[in-house]
Length: 406
Image (cartoon, rainbow, N blue to C red):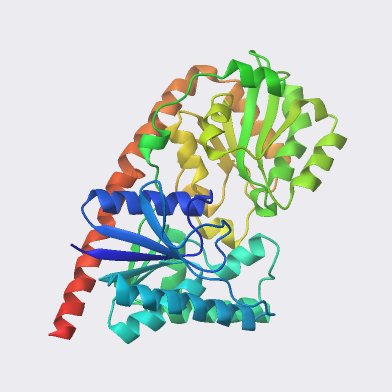
C-alpha cells in the first residue's frame, strides 16, 4: 500500500481554507486505498498530542523551537520540521513526501527526501512572498520579498514535481523558467458531502441578528484581511441601499481588519444595515449561509489576488448561493461573468453597488444562475474528481524512485 506523508503548515483541528483543502485531499486519497498521514510545522496553532487523530486523519506534530529573530527563526523552524519528518521517514516509512506551501515546508521535505531517496512533490497554494504583502507583513520588491521568491523558485527546481492550485500560479512559475511538464494544476474544490445540501433558512438566527424575512442579504464569510476588500463592500452600502432599500450586509468572521471595519461601518450612513456576526464555529457556518442571498467577494487587485483562486466562492456555489466578486485573475478562473456569477471592477465601491443592485433587481434569473454554478462545481471543482490529477504524478515519481533504487 502506497504511503503518502503530507508536510503542512497547520492542520485540523484548526479551521481555515488551508486545513479544509488538506482534509479534502487526504480524505479522497484514503478513499482510494492509499495510506496517508500529515505532519505539521511549529506554526500549527492548536495544542494537541503528537500522532493526533482528527476526523479520521492522523497528524504528527513538530515540537516548538526557541524564539529568535528572522531569519534565524525560520532556519530553526526548517530544522525542527526536517528532524520530525526524518523520524517519520524511519518509523512510518512513507513512499512519497507531499509538501504544501509555504516554502519552509518544502525546504524541510527536500532535505529529508534527498537524504532518504524519497520523491518529493511540492504543492503551492500561494507564493509566500505575495501572501506576506497581502496580509500586511511584507512589501513587494523588498529584500525579504526577493529572497523568499528566490527560495520558492529554488525549491520548485529541486522538487521532483510541483502542484499548484490554479493557472495563475502555473503561469508565473513558467515565466520563472520552470518546465511546464513539471507542473500540474490541482484546483481548489469542494467536498460535496460537506457543502452539498443547501440548508433551510434559520429564522431564529435571522431574528437574533436583526434580519427580517423580506430583507435582501449580501454576505461575506471569511477572514478579515485588507486584500479581501471588505472596506469597499462597506463603502458600497449607502449606494446599494439607495437603489435597494431592503439590502442588508452580513459579515461573518474576524481578522486583522476587524476593528477598522467595525469603526468604518459605525460611521457609515448605512450603519443600521451592516451586521457583524463575529467568528463562528465551522460547524455553524451553514446556518449563516442560509440567511444570505448573495455572497460578495470584493478582493482588491494585486499579485496575490490575480494569481491565487480562493475557496469560498466555490463553497457558496455548492450551497446554491449567488456569487458576486471583483474582476481579478483568481476570481476569473472560478466565475464566468453573467453565467455562474457576477464580476465587478475591483477597488470600486460604486461598481460593487451597481452589480449587487442589478442582481437584486433580477430575481427571476436567480434559479438558473444557481443551477449553472452548482453544475460547474460538480463537474469541475469536486474533490472526488480533482484527486485524480495527482495519481499519474504519484505513479511516475514512485516508478522513478524504484528504478533509481534498482
